[in-house]
Structure formats: structure tokens, C-alpha cells
Amino acid sequence: MRYLSTRGEPAALAFDDVLLAGLARDGGLYVPETWPQFSAAEWRALRGKQYHEIAFAVLKPYVGGAIPDADLARLTREAYANFTHKAVAPLKQLDANLWTLELFHGPTLAFKDYALQLVGKLFDYVLGKRGQRITIVGATSGDTGPAGIAAVAGSQHIDIVVLHPNGRTSPVQRRQMTTVLDPNVHNVALEGNFDDCQDLVKALFGDLEFRDRYRLSAINSINWARIAGQIVYYVHAALALGAPDRAVSFCVPTGNFGNVLAADAARRMGLPIERLVVATNRNDIVARTILTGTMALESVAPTITPSMDIQVSSNFERLVFELAGRDGRATSAMMTEFRQSGKLAFPQGMKGALADGFDAGAASEGETLNTIAKMRLTTGEIVDPHTAVAIHVAQRAKSDAPIVVASTAHPAKFPDAVEKATGIRPALPDFLADLFEREERVDILPNDAATLKKYVAAHAKAQ
Ligand SMILES: *Cc1c(COP(=O)(O)O)cnc(C)c1O
Image 1 (cartoon, rainbow, N blue to C red):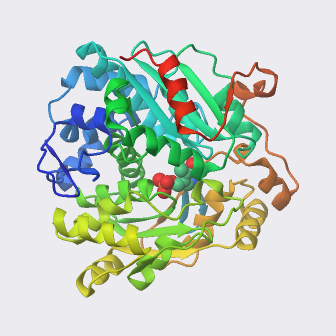
Image 2 (cartoon, rainbow, N blue to C red):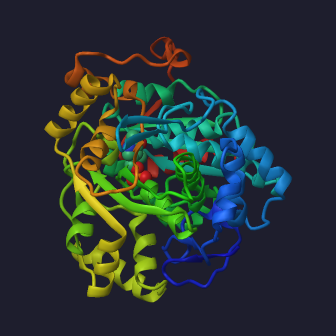
């Protein structure tokens, strides 16, 4: 298996190169050259298998020989060994036709663990073979940072520098980062907001000399390996509900479009998915784009679902590439137009394909809180606000098939919203019960690229 850039660069890299590179050199995102196809018999053969066995089967064609099978099997087994639920990603039935797919049984209680625990192992494996070191630099508004740190803490081959906006993440999220004291983990509380953090990270990646010198690498969902790792739980869930002999639908709380893109990838691989429903909060650019065929930028409003407070969903480019018939030049022109004008009207054919492939809806703050309260009353379940957004949207979606909501975070990660809705403050699981007693280590830096570069230079061992 080789990988291409969505902007047309005919790089044709292998999986391990794509893993380390993150973003393509022409500014595009890597996508597989072709979509692996599974027959009904091949899906059926995976029924009843353990999560890590399904992970191996799904990832094997994407890895495409870049890692020997025996090693890939070991890495997938190790990646999910410390998850706190034996099923790793269990399904829970909430209503006659409604399920949640719980993706919060990893070490940092959000779905990002499911891909990142594996990506951390893949990084270590490939770097160990090559005798290389890298420096991961990333910005987080709350969930990616903890999951990324948990995935690489203690690695002999990786330094990780994570920027979060000082004072603007939840105390649980901050402590999930700052209490990790391994010497390769470097937390920066930036005097600025999340956009400032992202701009500084972009500035470092934009300085090619600096980027090459410290071998900068990324762990956000522009990295293809993350998308590949997320395909697994859609397959696991669909098989449990009767696929390939019965179709299922999924409804996914969406920000950067990485999670729902993995469901789309599963569908392209032949998994029978009836409807894919994109759920957003009031930062609803993706939902509007699907419903109207025009992508139009607005400003970001803060909500009780902060992991979806986003306007430019970087992974949407991977879908644009497919809708454009995998034409890199056309994709590049459209993305450039969108960046320059903040608006992009898709041509009729693409508009139709978008509407055929996806449904979409948004939930207000009030609707989100109501849904948490209603779920508590009708099912006894306490769901996190991101999950509640998707439940609200799923309950209004048309689907004959069972509809599965991706439950992307544990309610204890967002205790204020849950308490407001239910009067109950959800407790952290036992293994995090002492989180607020643990020692913190963090460096507060001004919003300045030169200072950050000095900081990275002082801490990165890759040079
Ligand atoms: C990251 C995140 C999302 C959004 O996922 P995308 O892949 O960015 O669309 C939704 N919910 C939670 C809890 C998250 O952490």
C-alpha cells in the first residue's frame, strides 16, 4: 500500500514514512492510494474476534507490509492491553434502535486514546528500527494533549512538547497532562488562547530548517495512522450488531472531522453502513456544508462541548479529495479558495454526493443539557456533553438500521456540564481518583515563537 497527497504530489510513500511525516510536503494530507476491500465472507470471519484481532485485520492492508505481521499483531495486542473494559469499545443499548459505542475506556477517558495508544507503539517501533529520534510538537484544547502524552510518555525515541492555553482547559484535562513527570514530556501553558497555541505550532512547522533539525512530528488527526486506528471500532461495533448481514448507521460528534472520516473509510472498505450522521454543536460549519453544499467560515463560539469548538476541520480535505474524484489539483484549488475567501460552494455533482453520503444536524447548549438529563431519567445512563450532542441529532435522524452514537468521552471529563444537567457530579475512575493530589510540572511561556523555539531546542534530544 502506498499513500498519496490530497494536493496531488505523487509522493507514493509507504505507511511508516507517512506515519512519521504527518503532513505532506505540498501541504496536503496523506490518503491511501486505493481503499482495501473486505468481502462479506471476510467480515464474517472477524465476528466474535477480540478487539486487538480486529485491529490487526483492519490495519494490515493499510500497513501494507511496512511492518511484519507478527510485529503488527504484537503492537495491536499491547496497545489495548491496559484499557479498563474487557471489550475495549463496548456497545450499550439506550432505546429500541439506539446504541452508544463507548470510546472512553482508555487511559485519558476520550476516544483519542483508541488510535493514539496504537500510534505511540507504531512510532516507537519504527523509530527503534531506524535508530532515529523525533520531537512531537502539538497544541491542544483539551483531549488530544492528554492522549498524546499518555501514548508516548517514557519513550526512548520521542520528546513531546504540548501547548495548552494557560487557564483555559478544564482542571481534569490540565492535570492529565501536567502530572505526567516522565523526562520526555514537556508541558507548556501558553499565555494566549487555543488559536495562539495552534499558530505557534504552525510557525515552528513552517520554519523548514527548524523542522528538519529537530525532526518535528505531529499527533493530531492530520496523521493518517490516527484515522486508520479509528476505523477499527466502527468495524467492531458493526460486526457485533450483525454486519455484514445487517447494515448499521453511525452518528458521530464532530469537530475536526477525523472520527467520522474513519467511519467513511470503513464504508469505503465495504462495511455496510446505512447512514453516517454528523453531529455538531453550534459551531456547525460541517453540518451546514453537508446540508447546503456550501462551506462558509464563521467565528468560533465557546460551548460546553469544547472538543467540537472548531471552524476549519482539517480532515474535511480528505473527503473533498474523494468527492472531487481523487483529483489533487482540483482539491488544492478548492482548499486554497476556501482559505482565501472563507467560503466554498461545491459544484452540483459534489454537492449531491455529499448529501447522499452524509446526514447532519446540530444541538444547542440547551438541547445538549436536556439530552443529558433525559438520558439519566429514561435509561439511568450518564453521558458526557459531546455524546449528548450526537444523541440529540441521532434521535432526529432517519435510519431503518440500528443507529450507533460514538460516545467520545467519559462524563467525569466534563463534570460541570453533567452536574448542571443532572445534579450529579460524576466521579473519575479509580485509577485517576488521586489526580488532584498528584504533583504537576508545567512551564508558562509568553505567546512568542522565538521563545518557544528556544524552549524546544533546549528540550529536544533529536538533533
Ligand atoms: C476530539 C473530540 C471530538 C471531535 O472529534 P473529531 O475527530 O475532531 O471530529 C468529539 N468529542 C470529544 C470528546 C473529543 O475529544
